[in-house]
Image (cartoon, rainbow, N blue to C red; front, side):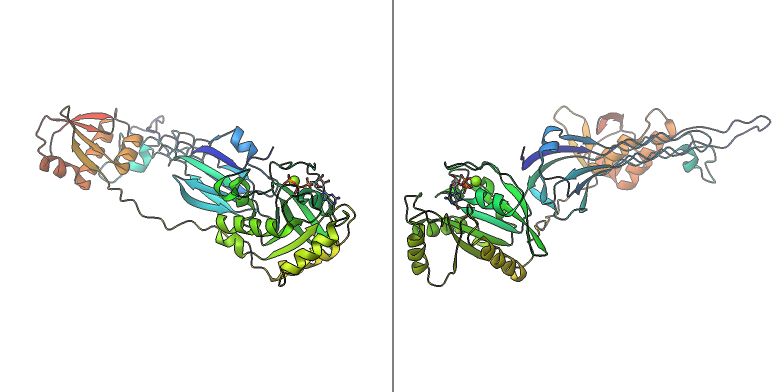
Length: 418
Ligand SMILES: Nc1nc2c(ncn2[C@@H]2O[C@H](COP(=O)(O)OP(=O)(O)OP(=O)(O)O)[C@@H](O)[C@H]2O)c(=O)[nH]1
Ligand SMILES: [Mg+2]
């Protein structure tokens, strides 16, 4: 099944906890600290993989969690690092977070780090200093990053077949490639894009057949712009105009209407090199209709083809190859300029219920990693808060000795040191 949109949640692995331990040896009176660091948590990556053609798999399995790091051990045994998780996606996947483009996984092998694993906590051996030779302190492992992402696939094909429903797009695709799209004599036979690889002499290129467009497609009529975006990255468009008389409108009308739709959808689509083909030339009235269309479009060469008999198809393909040689590379979608979000180290607010609340990313990280049952750890947090200027800010806000202060989720009694 062809799925071109998906939402996924990626979670980095938790870092392993640091260990608190002291060496115990026979005949050695005072062993030093030997608690090792925990291993870092694994990260989640997204990677473009040529084997994938749709977002089907991720849409049905939307949660990705990397491995956690192991805890550090005694005897200076460092915890194992958690393994990274690589999520394979089809080339051409755009990655959005909060509607901001994070990246374009255009070429196979392109990678994007989306959720970093948490750092491993430090063991007490790491806290040893000349002053504190027996630290009774260890850190917890950091929590991995959590992100919700929106994925959108914009197919990467060299050539896009466009035209009104029934123009014969799928029939042409089945003639020039090994693809087997559904073909029928009613409009909207094709409901999702089909891709095929076409070989001409020693060249090959990817052709995309998308559902037929109708008037108002850019406003969402018919299958509309759902699929127009899949030809946005093609390098050359082949515009099929039915000249058999099956479509009640004159071929010239449908030609103009379709170009109007492309233009309304995007200026880039309208500017793409376009090769025009009159289709179903094997039908009795087609040659006459073809002639009058060519007369009206003086400057544009139209290729007469029949996907059923094969007439004119080679000449069309040669023109496609020539146009591809001259066409620019498919555009890369670059992340928009990021407006920086100012994220202060901490904020202090007085809650309506009374206590002061201290929050912020840096504070949250520290709280997550602190063992509050260790006196030395608590003392260390207090030292860090002081250095950050939290105590000063609390005092400035009117906090007094004995007031309750909430640090993220942990309650403290305010005892200013200074
Ligand atoms: N005689 C003749 N019939 C054709 C030719 N090409 C396509 N047809 C017929 O036209 C009808 C529509 O063909 P499709 O290839 O399904 O058309 P499409 O453009 O893919 O249509 P949608 O997917 O609905 O947009 C089918 O009945 C085909 O058999 C041709 O060259 N000659
Ligand atoms: Mg079709």
